[in-house]
Image 1: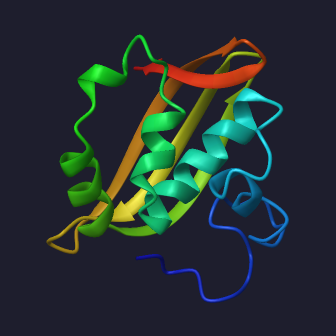
Image 2 (image 1 turned 90 degrees about the vertical axis):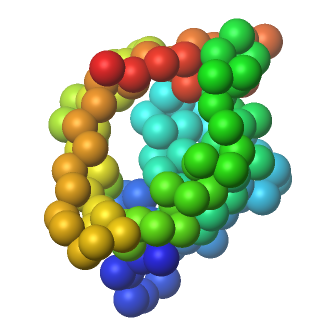
Length: 127
């Protein structure tokens, strides 16, 4: 669930969802940058699109991700916002704010690493 009440994309780009992350989540197009992939993955958590989260995780690391756990986190969180702190070719530092299942405000800060493999961006890992 998201606290967003208008047609703006969940990722905070100030674009409409239909022209921002939805084409990526529906498989119509691929993110052209690591930041676009990061933003679309956040939107995937908001919309509970677990298959997209798994598909955009590097095949090398995908085995460490549990679809049921991803869905539980997505369902039990009320997504508030995504803030990109910095972005380079293959790194994106961000803060995702959400309310946990108890209603407590959480701020997940991460410095994520991405890699382009065969023309497609993948999430590798984050710290």
